[in-house]
Image 1 (cartoon, rainbow, N blue to C red):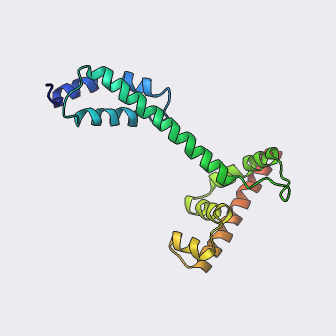
Image 2: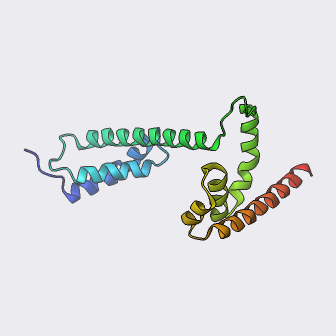
Image 3: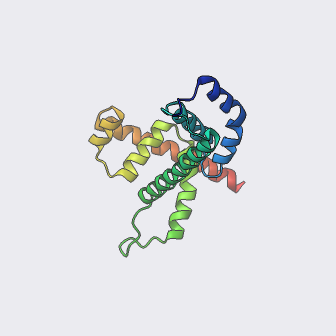
Length: 168
C-alpha cells in the first residue's frame, strides 16, 4: 500500500514539471496556473500517492482545464443571452443590428467606472425595479435613479468623444 506524497516529493514535482503542466493546460484554459495549482493541491491531499505521480498530475490538469473551458463557454453563452433582447416580430431588430449596437456601446460601457457600469447593466438588462437595484447597490431607489442618470450622461460623453475622435 502506497503512502501519501511527502512535501519534498511535491516540491520536487512542482519545480520540475509546473511549467510543462501550465503549457499543457493552456490548450483549454485561460487560467492554466489555477488548473496546475488545483492539481498539486489534489495530489497533496491524496491518502495514497498515485503510482505514476506525473501521469496522474497530467490527467488532473487536463480534466480541470477542460472543465474550466466548459464553464467559460457556459458563462459566455449565459451572458450573451441576457445581453441580447429577444428578436421577434414585435421587435424587428436583426441580429446584425444587435451586433453593431453592442460593438458601439461596449467601449462606452468599458470606459465607465465599475459602479456606473453596474447600474447601467442592472437597469437595462436585469428588469429589476429601482427599489431592488437600490437594495443591491446599497442605497435608496431615488439615489439609484440619480446615479443611473449620471452614469448614462457619463457614458454619453465618453461615446461622443469617441465618435468625434473617429471622425477626425
